[in-house]
Amino acid sequence: MAPSERPIGANQMGAGLIASDAARHGDRTLADQAYEQILSMIMRGEIAVGAKLPTEHALSEQFGMSRPVLRQALQHLRDDDLIVSRQGSGSFVTRKPDGAVLNFAPISSIADIQRTFEFRTAVESEAAFFAAKRRSDTELASIKSALEALDACNAAGQLGVDADEDFHAAICNASGNHYFMAARMSMKANILTGLNLTRNLSLTKPKDRLQLVQREHYAIFDAIAAGNQAAARDAMRAHIENARKRVFDGTLEP
Image 1 (spheres, rainbow, N blue to C red):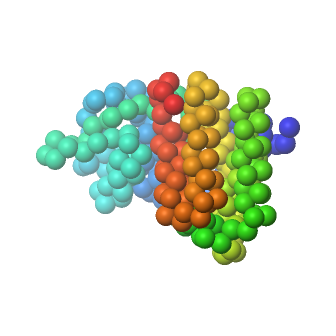
Image 2: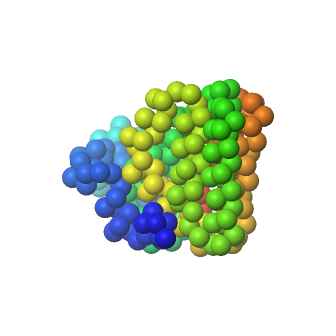
C-alpha cells in the first residue's frame, strides 16, 4: 500500500500539510486562528448546538484580535455551515462537527484544509470546463481509468487517495492549459491532506457515503465525456463544495 493510501493520524497530517512546517505557521492568518479557536469551543461542547456565540466584542477581547479580523473568522464559520447569523440577535451554532475529524487532522490545520477546498473549487471547476471542450480520447481514457481505480478501492474498502488524486489531476491535464496543472501542483501537499481527511472520514460512515462521492465523480466524467462544458464546471464545483462541507458532517447520513 502506497504511503498516501494509508489512514493517517493528526500528527502525520499536520506535519505534511505543506512543505515547510515553519512557513505554515507564518502563513496562518489571525482570522484562521480565530476560526480555529471558535471551532475548538464548538467541538469541545463549550458552545452547544443552538446556543448563541459570545458577542463580537467579547470574542475580540478574549482572543486579543480586532473585530474586523473576528468578522472574517465568523464569515468562514458561516461558509462552513457551522454558525448562522440572525439579524439583531447574533450568531448561533448550527451543528457540532464529527469528533472523528480530530483523529485525522489537528485543529490547527482545519482552516488551511477548508481554504484549500476553496482554491480547488476555483481552479478545478474551470479545468473541468475546458476539459469538456478540449479533452482527447486518450485523456478521457485516463480520467476513466482513475475512476475505475476508485471503484475498485471503494469495493475493497481501501482509502483510495491515490486514485482520487489521479482522477482530479487527469482532468486538469485534459484542460489543455498547463497552468491549471501547475496551480494544482503548487498545492499538492495541501490537497493530499484534504483528500486523506475526507476519505478517512468517509470510511467511518456507512458505505452510502463513498457511493455518494463516487456518483459525484461520475457526474463530472459524464459531463466531460459529453463535451458539456457548463455541466462539467457545475459538477466539479458541487463535488468540491460538498467535500468541504462533509468535513464537518457530524451525522450518519451520506
